[in-house]
Length: 363
Image 1 (cartoon, rainbow, N blue to C red):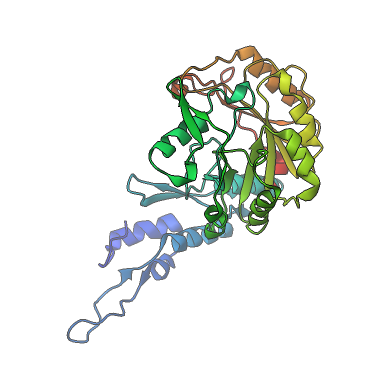
Image 2 (cartoon, helix red, strand yellow):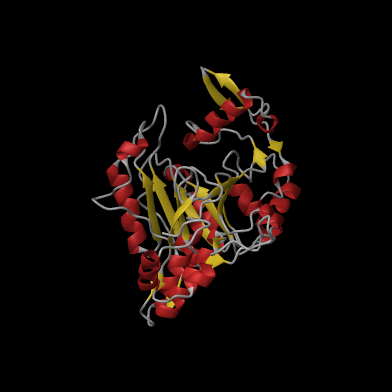
């Protein structure tokens, strides 16, 4: 309703006055032109000069004046060209539940503030200071990163050179590891906080990643407290071994991947670390896990395998994990049923979705 570089019709002004409950928006949204014409006259009326960040600040202050509290973050809903069309806020009217409600809303809106999108569920961005890996256990067989690295290597990207080879028409990890020092300072260039998945194209605790380089990765995470980092490893033995050498920041979630009951020991090794937030990634789930001890675990994520040559997950496996999380009071997130067309199979379990977040992870 606010045109650019011309007066707002009186009827429009009246509507905005009623909608916003005050008239100060006229001074906030508009400014008097400072550029004179050829005859040194100032143009009549006002011009719109407001940035989206200022619009966000204005509406947050209005919400704070009307409710007991409003979220620190707003979600920008953009059109196909990336132009902001709407801003989504959360406001709380109940004084008694204000603290926890705003804490949850701030976390949700923060992690949904997409500035560098990632295709990984629950994650905004990926950060890959290491490239390359080695097949370690059955969960690695159809690794999406292995396929993607093969394509990137074929495109000539030096970061992925020699990380894969073609076997049986498919890309397979060679075990060659590339350390990408140029990537170490990337998170420091992102001012707004993000939820960042670390090393989606490798395993930070791979045996060929030097401790010195691992510590430099942790130094970057410690120096960027505005971000929240997720690290996932199958190499829980090395994680436990290096734990005493790591200065764990509170903004790091540390997780292990467990695909079947043969690798439950990874969970115990994770528990032995001093990481502040510990989570489990039970995906791709390849067998039942009916005896989980979730003490000192803050979040469990489960899901089926997707992509070509998938190994199907059984509903009873997912239900068992969900029920164990409920019994042990641990947050549970069911990501997907998977399959060749994961969007069609979706993520509903017994008619609903499970997207719980740990109160510890929310901070």
